[in-house]
Length: 193
Image (tube, rainbow, N blue to C red; front, top):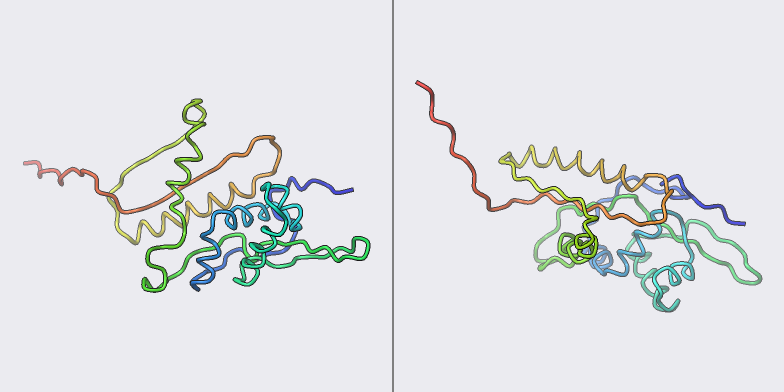
């Protein structure tokens, strides 16, 4: 009998963070179905059959995508189990967080990964219409160094979110972004005097 993992942590060992820079890794991560597969195994290791059932796709198609992720070093076999005469493989991520490192623009222009904000806008539309969406947006004039420091704090919060115990029936998404934006700003105040 399988027990349900509610800890919020995968049921296998994986690195905390992996910096990805190779075009093959970026391309593998960019495909929406493969991104979904990587998200699914963040909860627990899964077989190709389990992944296929979760995304309602043929097992052969999912096997192809899993092999692309394994070849790119983003997924690996974390354990096996003998079922009758067949060895069943359970796949997991190689790291909890995949961080895109410095990439030569000529290797990935235009970026092969999806725009998470555009994807989230589509995904959140039904929640917006049902008045079940929470969102915030702020503009702040800060230095690039301070933006990088703040982003590390945001990334830690997102990691905390992904490790929350699994105790509900409904899935929630958290999207965050930090980017330079054209936005009005106030001039420095005039000196008093």
